[in-house]
Length: 305
Image (cartoon, rainbow, N blue to C red):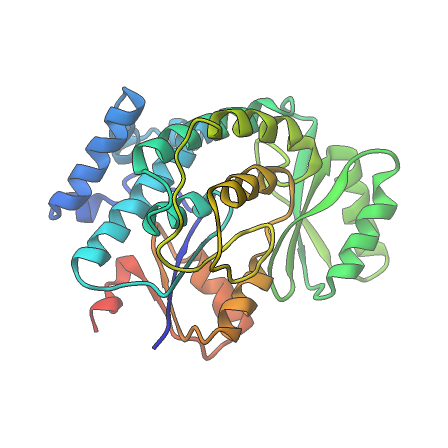
């Protein structure tokens, strides 16, 4: 059996996530305490008690989700459940790299706090937005819609999540035009998302520059297992510190190639998927790609079987 650990990104957060394990695992308690120490504040209190407005602030959401995912990964390791490959959706790539021994957890907590701040401040509120394109399986059709809708503004694919689910991002007006084109031409349905910034498009380039400066002083090691970067969607066994840092910088302003990444893992024999984090978003995407896939969430504890 070939097992992939997949780590969720922003949008999977909820107040109280990790709470069940916090009460019964010293490893989880230790991980939450390490996050608090790394930031010099009680992130664990926001995770446990909210309010939701504080937890969903990007600068809190990102280190919070990282903390829960890493805590769960540590439990799996202690229980003897190991990964043959790791991947994470957007922010989840940091969790994957920590789990693979490439990033120190405390460094990752601090970097994801900065990443959240930089991504939020890169584009003023109300300038950019995102939309999910439902029912269109051809990425080239979506790219064409974006190009025609741009009209001098930014309108770009932001995530290729799974068959029939692509996300686009850019200026509000351009995204509105793309949604209208999809409807008028019968090429899918565009559903605007409630987001605070247009993530994973070129409007976020300034955030990538800030992240590059922060990562310059962060030690990165060779991952202990293969990993699949968001920006390539390719099973990678020869990652270096330089290539990992470049991938983390690029993924801020480039699309998440999640479907190609899943397909790459399937080609390499992955036949068990464990979502290591809050919720079940990623195993749902796997199931949409392959209904017969063996998918497990950490919180279900089916990995014990």
